[in-house]
Length: 101
Image 1 (cartoon, one colour):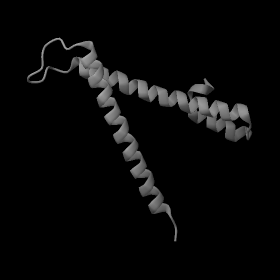
Image 2 (cartoon, helix red, strand yellow; image 1 turned 30 degrees about the vertical axis):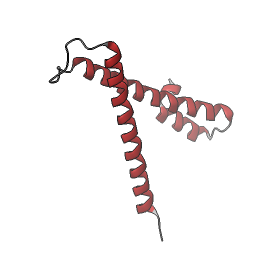
Image 3 (cartoon, helix red, strand yellow; image 1 turned 120 degrees about the vertical axis):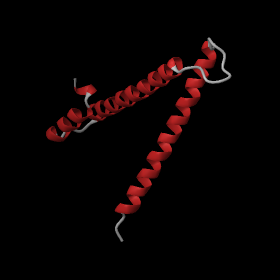
Image 4 (cartoon, one colour; image 1 turned 90 degrees about the horizontal axis):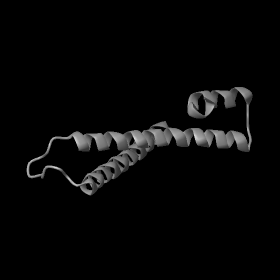
């Protein structure tokens, strides 16, 4: 259960003042599994939206699986790129506001 919950893992590490290679590995695995969960959810949400979307004007019925996969992949890449850009901009703004003279 500890490897699935970042908050409990961080709380235990802080409470026990744990340090070392196992602790670092545990925290790394915890963060990677959370990242994977978010990415997989985004992929599934995009695939479902693309598969269940009504046909747009000019599209053929029964799109090929390759076209569906390409559409999902392109939208995912755009969303990830925009999310990273927005995160970096937010971080830069926070750093700029918190910088003391």
